[in-house]
Image (cartoon, rainbow, N blue to C red; front, side, top):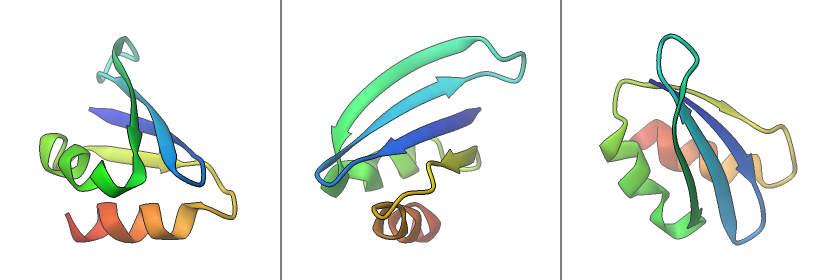
Amino acid sequence: MYLGIDTHTRYSQVAVVDDDGNLQDEIRLPNDRLDELAEQYAGGEAAIEASGHYRPVYEMLDSG
């Protein structure tokens, strides 16, 4: 699975696609719940929007 993450101050918008590029899910969740996302998609690859809000999101996903 692959995750595309658009970060915002309080929440992130996430698109989940499979190996063939088919959209599997779209999720909008508060940034303080991203640990749940990391657990659910452990082992997946993630692309995070390069913005001023990416660092806390990256650190949370990296530790998950």
